Length: 487
Ligand SMILES: Cc1cc2nc3c(=O)[nH]c(=O)nc-3n(C[C@H](O)[C@H](O)[C@H](O)COP(=O)(O)OP(=O)(O)OC[C@H]3O[C@@H](n4cnc5c(N)ncnc54)[C@H](O)[C@@H]3O)c2cc1C
Image 1 (cartoon, rainbow, N blue to C red):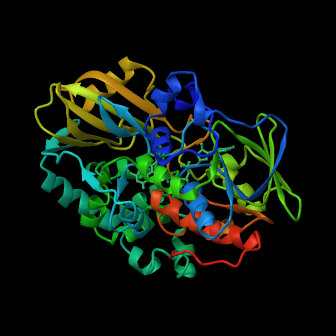
Image 2 (cartoon, rainbow, N blue to C red; image 1 turned 30 degrees about the horizontal axis):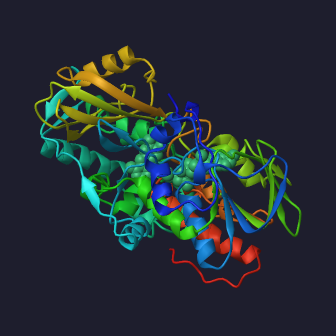
């Protein structure tokens, strides 16, 4: 049920802000028509060499959109190539039950300075969902209701124990290697290793191991302790800030922010244009697409997920740190997001699963004329999200009163142009790969949230990486640079 299977649309230059907004937010509806004319029609012919661009940006998620806009601001003319028939990457604002829903990245917070600045710049407000009246939590006898105060005090205290000491190894969480010696002492730990160190009772552990396993993409043994500890530190080293960072969304949808950024990039945009080969020729870079089109520019920003680097042929080959990272993976392997339209619920709820339960979380989002819209995240054991009966059965285990009317799901691990969900570094990756992984490879620079110094795994991190790559690319293109505002 990946959107990669939907019929595609072709894109070309000169898209208006309104058109880009439609592409971001309403792709499914546009694509479903199957016929595309006017400004969406591509003008490129196969194998015709294209030049005249200062830079080529490959991938139009938040990192690519930021890089493109900043390159334009520095006086460069970028060409934007995107594999999918829509913009946004791991963010995707779709419509379900007549409401905008985020199929990928959703929450933003004032503790994240760059996305906060973007929302201010474009005058885009935030919104919140329903406030849950009850929490459904794991117990030895199965899921049971608790008050929100009980959830936050008991789980909050457990999270504080989990991350105890993080203030000493991440005194400035935007500069995660500032205390490199201290960090290297804990960076080899998986979240499972850290849970084991705490020696919690099984009942206590079940209140937090759904978070450690779910955020790791299926098992607490996948994710690095330092990766989640850095999120905790960035949020402000306390549970109130941790919960608050997962409560606000962009009122008009994530795709509207990217659309606004791209309108400022004033660049030629080509959708449905997967890049297969990138060759650094010393004084320029040649990019070849799946259909054999060739484009050249003085520099290229590779703004695709780390997990995708291994699918592109780089000449010369990637440096070993990049090659290792893409083989290991940074985007978590299992990440399925569902929107469930249900009847039968009388109040708003939040469900937390334990490690091994079908859902990491289920959250009441909004009311509809027939019931409620719920947002859910599934990692492992994998619920077959293409099978309605499987989804219904999983939902029944945590919210037996909910009757499924319809649902929508996105499997990010299975999506060809993500091959994973949000980034959560694996044990050892922080000390071994940062900052080398942020450096250009000849005339090629890299931009993705997966390699951010700060909020890696968030939209905030993608914007940080986009600013950095634009600075690097402008320098490689031989322009005197105005340094971008970043930490
Ligand atoms: C389920 C889920 C929930 C999340 N929740 C949150 C949240 O609440 N808050 C938050 O801040 N973040 C969240 N995130 C993370 C956030 O969405 C990502 O960190 C961020 O969007 C990544 O942006 P990016 O630009 O680095 O990469 P992407 O968004 O993945 O963009 C990369 C682009 O490159 C394109 N591409 C790939 N290969 C090629 C190719 N060969 N040629 C051309 N183009 C190519 C892709 O199609 C894509 O458009 C979530 C992610 C997921 C999956």
